[in-house]
Each structure stands twice: as C-alpha cells, then as structure tokens.
Length: 188
Image 1 (cartoon, rainbow, N blue to C red):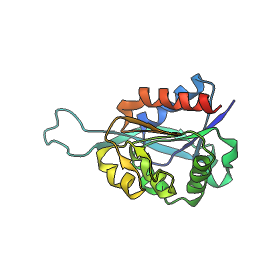
Image 2 (cartoon, rainbow, N blue to C red):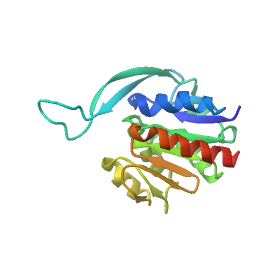
Image 3 (spheres, helix red, strand yellow):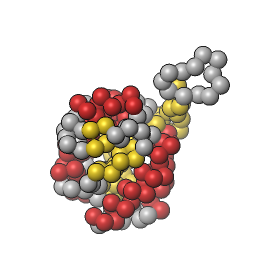
Image 4 (tube, one colour):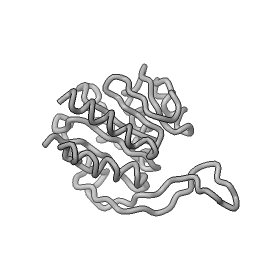
C-alpha cells in the first residue's frame, strides 16, 4: 500500500487532520503519522464561534482528540512516500523549524510527488522553499507566509498548481482530498 506522510505536532487542527487520516486509507493509501518525536500529540478545534457575546476576529482554540505519531521525522526517508499531506492548526508554526521535516518536504516536492496542505500548513511549504512561483490557497491570515515563500496567494478555497493542492481550511476538506487523491492516482 503506498504511503502518505502526515506530519503532526501539538495543536494540529482536528478536522484538518482526522478527515484525511481516515479518508486516504479508503483510497488504498497508508497514512504514516510522524512528529518531532514518536509520541501522542494533542489536536485542537479552530473556529470562529457563532453567537459569541464578544465576537472573535480570529479563531478560538479548544482541545480536540489525540493522535499518535508512530515515528519521528528524523527516522524517515522521502523515497518511501507517494506524497505528503500537511495539516493545519498551530502545529505548523513550530514544525516549520524542524530540519528533518523540511528535508522530507523538500525531497518529496523535488521528486515531483503530490503535495497537499491546508490552512497553516503553508508555513511548512514556505519554510521548505518549495512553493516559489506557485499559486496557492490558505487562510487569509497566512497569506503573508505564502507570499514570503514566493507563491501567489489565491484566497480561501482550493487551488491546484501542478503537483500542489492547497486549501484554506477544514471546510474545504472534501474538494481538497478529491484533488489530492486524483494527483496521487495520476502519479501512481
């Protein structure tokens, strides 16, 4: 079964993470959850809550489920993967400093394999230097991260540019995964 790398860390967004975690195996892909260490990580729910007494201008964060990283980034080889799915939430804010994750991301992208990310995941792609000249989608508050990586920000939705498929957030999961699976099958 072809493997898909899914980097996680504390504060990965719950829906950004668990939808592809369960959806990709339905298409015949083994999702390998990896982190800075092989351990249990906390996910979080990010949303602008409706009917708040004091309206939120950014997302509120609440605890979500836990997810087990079965392996550390440093113990992986990019050639073992058919693609990478980078989840959102706040985890990418610190994962983008992990040199082993950046190595894996760069090698997978340079090999022409499908790369999928949503929300704050763009911070990892930008730090890895793999989106220069690409059109990408992310949440509005990460537009600067996309542009600093040399990409053209296309707004909140789903954008496919070559081997890259990017999206704004969990509300885009269905179309995002449809496009990612299409790219995986075409590459496969």
